[in-house]
Image 1 (cartoon, one colour):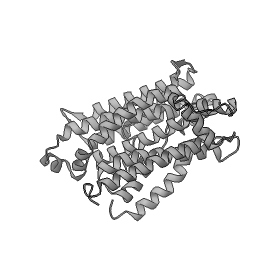
Image 2 (image 1 turned 90 degrees about the vertical axis):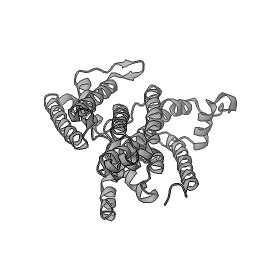
Image 3 (image 1 turned 60 degrees about the vertical axis):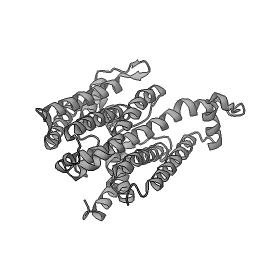
Image 4 (image 1 turned 135 degrees about the horizontal axis):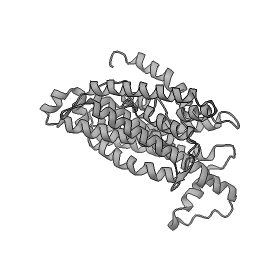
Length: 347
C-alpha cells in the first residue's frame, strides 16, 4: 500500500495500537500476587495528575504503594525497552539489508553481560542516585564494546556493514567466552549471572525510567526522522546515493543512535532476545516495509509484546518469577520460524 495514499489510515492504526498499549499497561499493573482492581489502578495513576483531583481515600494504602512503587515502574520500563528493541531491530535490518539483523548485532549484549558479570562477582550492589552499579557497568560494557566494533569496522571515512557484522560476531564470541570463564571460577554467583543474562525487570525503579526515557525519546525521534533515508538504503547504497542520500552520514547516525538505545535497554533489562526480530517482521507483513510506518508502529508493537511477555513471566507460576527472556524465546522462536517459512520467498 502506498504510504501517501493511506497516510491517514496508518496514523489511525498507530493511534489505535497506542491506545491498546495504554489499556494493556493498566491491566498489567492490576495483575500480580495481590490483585488490584483496574479502576483502582487508573484512579491511583490519575491521582498523580494534580489538576484532576481524583479521590483515592477509599483504596488501601498497601495497594497504592504496590501500584506506584512496584508495578507501575516495572510496566513502564518493560514497555520502553520493548519499544526500543523493536525500533533498533528495524533500523539495523534496513542498514544491514539483512532480515536477521537484531539489536545486539554490534556486540552490545555480550559487552553488557561482561560488565554486569564483573559487578556481580565483585559484589558491587550499591546504588548511585538510585541506579544500581551493576546496571551502570552493563551500560558501560555495552557502550565500550559497540565503540570497539565500530572502530574495528571503520576504514577511513567509510563503514563497511560486512566488517561490522564480522567484528560484532568476534567481539560477542570473545566476551561470551570470558563471561563463561568467569562463571566457571565463581560458582556461588552462577545463579545471579544466569538470571541477569536471561533478562528481568524485577527491581525496576523510577530512577531507571528517568535514565531510559530521555535517550528513548531523543533516539527514537532521530531514527524515525531518518525513515525516508532508510527506505532508500533498503534498496541499495548506490540507488540511495542517486536519490541524494548521504549514505555514510546516515549509516553513522543510525549505527551510533541505535547502539546507544540498545545499550540503554540492555543495561536495565538484561539480555532479552527476539523482540527486535519478531515484532518488525510481523508488522512488516501486515503494514508493509515503508519505514515511515514500520518504525513508529514497531516501537508501539514492541512495547506491547514485551509488556505481555513480562506480565506472563511474573504471573504464570504462583510465587515464582520466570526470566522474561525465556518467555520471549518460547514465543519468539517458533513464531519466527513460522514467519520465516511463510515469507521465505519474499525475504
